[in-house]
Length: 572
Image (tube, rainbow, N blue to C red):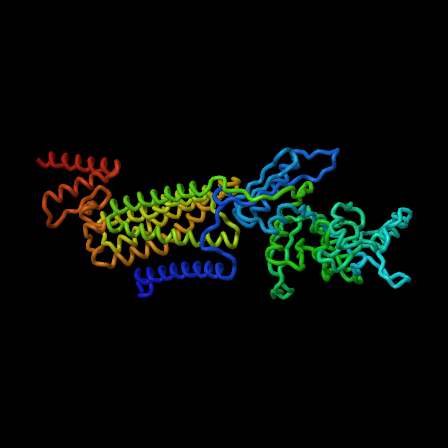
């Protein structure tokens, strides 16, 4: 073995990586506290902290009703939107047959409110006319006068059938007057309810440009995926601006390719297509190439928060009906601090029992388990605090239950490893050799067990809703951290301890005393004859060895003993 691959060097390298990971997580959290609005204390969920309750009322006419199917669909979409950035433990329920109650942990900011109430109806329309947002003209008296509303007698039907959505035949005298009189400040968003097969007048979301747009050519329903990210140029360089990346399904990809094929090379503004969200133009890019792969990009005055909110709205679809915010109130915790204290006390009791058991069973070796649990707790705390800052994760009572359950799962890994080492010592190996051989055998068992735990957590998280997802999430996170701690702390520590005289000599308090473990037993129903030992010690070790024999090994030993007795009779 080369000097670079010695167990000591491997252990030192692993512990160095552990130190780096802890330092990096701590640095990220401290940086978030100083400059990013993070806190050292993990955020709590609705059941432990309270939050904001928003009641949404469906916008319907007096002679129409809201179906239960529409409400259920809206509840599902709103829940997905709210939880899109993390496990926020929000509660979304129906009330009274036409209202939806959304309970969000903490204080809901404007982005969260928009995420909840926006219909997110997206469409792509070709630009026919683009101009100044003004709706006034200078009269003969020299004063600015608003354009009058369109006269009902003005023709509103095209004189010739338009050949495509970009045909100027769509611009009727009535539509031209509507365009002149349209007030971007007062009438913003009114185009949301316009028919999709007719042209509309709409404004840029910031009110800087007013458009006449042709009929819808690509519907937002054909978006298969949406994500937020930094924009890139054709060379792959980052533009430094947040954008929303879209992917269309087969129908949408074909329609989008047809649109870009027609618009590419046309004169401005006919080479533009407007991305209309809830009646407002959020972007009107020029088509510079045919996009045939179904991947588009929305650019605009986005921030990280607004781009993520829009991506989530588009990804999970538009609400089936419009809602208005009926009321918004702060609500208290559904469980409160008493239940939180009980949960923490329960965890401490479980941790104390684990400490007592490990010290009783493994003597001073148990301190490796204790320190491993401390390292795992530090990593878990830092990860949860960072997730609460960056992803909106909140710790519920169910999540705390997941952390408590994880204590037992974590200790299982150490017990498997320690018992493998003890088995190797019983086979007559030295401690250093027993640590390496025991790790090779224990690692397979640990990886298999943790893989099953992680799979169960993932399935539970995907299929469940509400607080159960919080339990599954913490269980999955702690499972990953458990494996990390065993690999880069527990095993390296035993590699180093095996070099010490106290543990390598098999001190009775080390928990790795070969004599106390019955090291005369070699396995496979064979026994090593001691060179010099007291008969009482031999008898005690033999009894220990016989206790540890499997049924198959015991039968094999009895058959061997019976065969030996028959041979003795023949010889006599």
